[in-house]
Image (cartoon, rainbow, N blue to C red; front, side, top):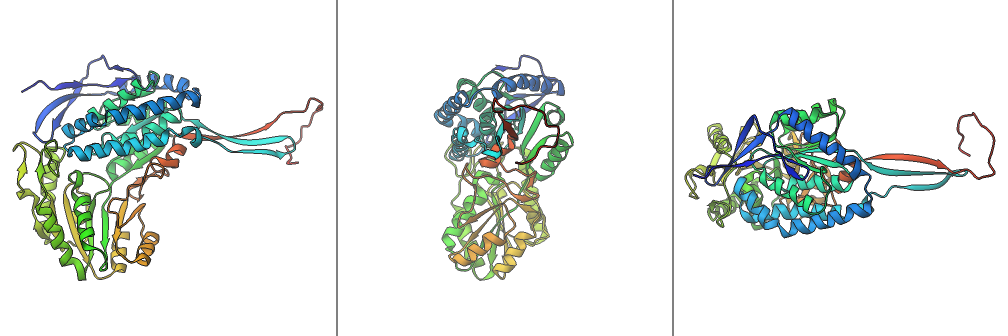
Length: 499
């Protein structure tokens, strides 16, 4: 067995040269083998990284847009040239199949392309002669040092939601990636160096709660972007805001797909399988609940079951349809939910624990799982399982389905499948969810729109990327200006008047 590779922090353009009091193991989920030993940062290491970033932020924030923009274009080019290599790193540490990993990098690439338009995006407003001889205008200025705390399920895409826009706006960034799959984030960060980003503007610090708390408490960190579970998102938001920071904390989800009687059931079945089991269900936009109107429920479930029979679960680098889950603990937790669903009385149509796996016995594999007759008080319905478990809830009508979705504490994404345009339009207006798909199972917006949910799926006022991202990483300054005519003279101590 080979010795695990040391994975350490990236401070500007150099690897951290100190030692770590604590480390964490990084696994290949398909084999169960330890591949890396990750340094976990203490609060003092976080402070060192933030100080380095703070010095760099002053210079980068003062750098002209004409000089920032070529760095963004070069980074976009390098990311595109290296996407297959980064996808392989994702598969090796997260487990998702290679095509899914490549798709993740490509979606992140779209945000980098959006950020290349930053000269247009940072234009302020100007009003001439608002009062006699007085002009008013607004400018957008960088915040300084911003932190990104990203989850394991998208180790490249989620940092790319935030970092290109933060950098384009003139900020320095400290990223804390997941301890489970840090290598892809590191490699993307190194591409910024190759693209010509000055030393200290891009930094990566690894760690657990100690590092997170140090970032949330640090006086020089002005904003925090987070993606993860709802309980942790709420914690990050509350602690960050208490420390005077701007925070966008994207939380968990329980995404529903409503299927009406007039829907194309083959399309709906394909969508349920793709959205339920892609990336082994480990994504916040996964469909985990199919809300089926009674009259078509049996037919739809049979079509879903037939498609599931053809899925191949195994090592994500070998051409399988679905890879392992990320850790042994995740496998155990998901298996526990399957058992709980059975015990609660749901009908277990397909048991993923009994699937054939195309990988070593030590791999963290759970096959696609399907439940029918799920009640809303069962844990497989109420909890975000974050695994390949799809639940079918039967309803009598559109109205019943809508009420069920709106009663959920989460509001991240949802979808409706129907051929009735009136029903679809009514659904998009009435459903209390941040992202809506109409005959689209995973309604992830393009980079020039913003990503984010409602209710317990988002803490803070700003969504990710798009113009909301630009506004999050800048602060607006309003300027009122008067240049006096040379003939002007005299004093006036009165309150300024609009003349």
